Image 1: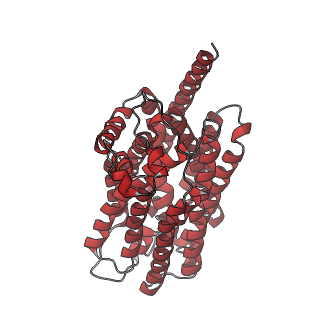
Image 2 (image 1 turned 45 degrees about the vertical axis):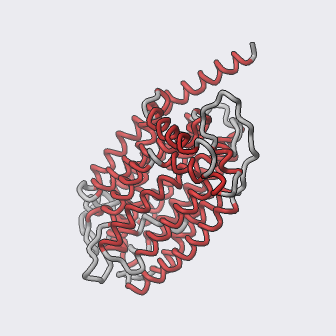
Image 3 (image 1 turned 180 degrees about the horizontal axis):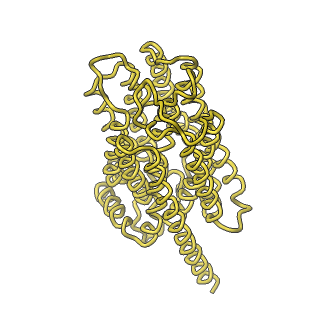
Length: 441
């Protein structure tokens, strides 16, 4: 399946151990911050999402994903021998690549799906994508197990391996299945990215008449979609996924690695935590994809399950992890917790974070693909625009706020995002019923 090619590339980009890796670097010439890097990435990511539909229109989704994948590979390779200038430059470039990559893959997901298969395909895509967390973090665990300090040779070995895997994944983008060409109605004004997918010759694509005007139109549509009623309703839910993305992918792993109460294996537990997050993501994505046809109650119950799952995880993390863990030095934190720190509880929370994340993201991918089928590339660009802005903000305040304040922000946005999603789902169902009633006349 085409989604698996994306997974191979995504499996090389591990955010969870990044701050821990940077803390352990021996080089006196390097003083970068993983949180700052991720804030830059998501800040650039958010801004680039507005022009990403135009890029995808100009060169096509397949080439867009390949070039973006190369930028990801470059970011990973930078950790082999990092310098401050290369670290932050690569952060900017991968932010641009991420915007184009996610817009292109969202478009491919939409045009390869129908109204009845979009939920299933979204779940399957998410499950395959999250295999990266399982295999990538398993490799991290095996590489760093028993190490109190991550040596330079260990770091180089890990990132050389990930760079090679990433490059292989980039070339596998060319094996993505292409949809059948569908003739558009004469009155349509949508830039036909479907046609771009069926044209493997990028030169021919670039020579198509009016392509620049189509690219401009894609940009205008992305700007207009931001203020539509449907997107405004979904914006709080999307914003929450950006905040919790930062937490489970960047902050929580760092917190586990900083807990001296977990013993000498605390650093290697970062990889185990990522594995459990991946198991939750895979289980959720696969389950919601397979059971999509049997879900007569819509998307709301799945999102509610995600909220409850996350609230349980946040409460246990509040009790089990020290408040200063996100900002603790490499030596770790000695601060007391509200309960005796438990590795089992920490890993359970990792699983719950992954499961809850899959609940929100599979349903958001499904509803965005359904509600904005005729404008899929701009819609997914706006999706990632909102998500990446909040992720950038979260990475910025992760350097400043203690853990319990970060958890409080997640609770507030999680509740508000769930309520707004419920309203958006009801609006979507009402619109679909009206269209069905009209067609039956």
